[in-house]
Image 1 (cartoon, rainbow, N blue to C red):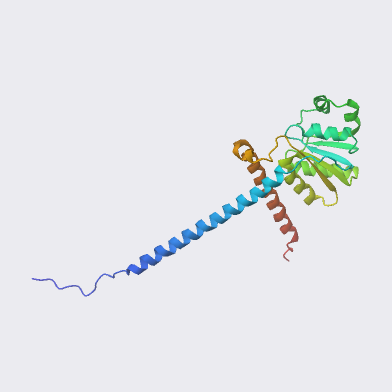
Image 2: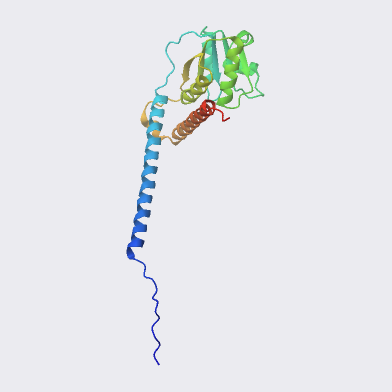
Length: 228
């Protein structure tokens, strides 16, 4: 006895539906890859410009006199250069910002071989700043306290762009005069073959971008009208 065929047959999916879905996924993946490549290219290009500007920063042969000097502690030679500027009469007072809490003015004076009288009369020590943001806050408070209009900023060349960015965005009335300290001459491309130098520059560039982003977000919050 033969069984009768069922009146309903299973639906057959069109091959075009699967191929169309695959094409859409391939296009989406290609778009994502393109966006990633463009973002990486923009990052690399802006990093190269940042690095080029940094390596070209050099201590000026001559610098105009200012009301005060601020040195941001960190790499070597920064404090020595700042004390030399103060001792040569480039300004009337020096702020050393970001000093380790246990370090005293006498210890710094001994390390720089400066005259004790110079430190007693004209050097202020800041133990509160823990980072560059803190340096900027303490510097601006010190400037306000003394009523200064112009200040020489002493820090490493790679650290100078971020330091000036934070200072000038928070205080646009003071004339900040950069005095970059160069511990290693990076003007030749050989520094690209030094992993330590590349890591240092990349880390500072990321911090610089983060500082700019934080400033822009804060500015948007200030400019945004309050909802009533």
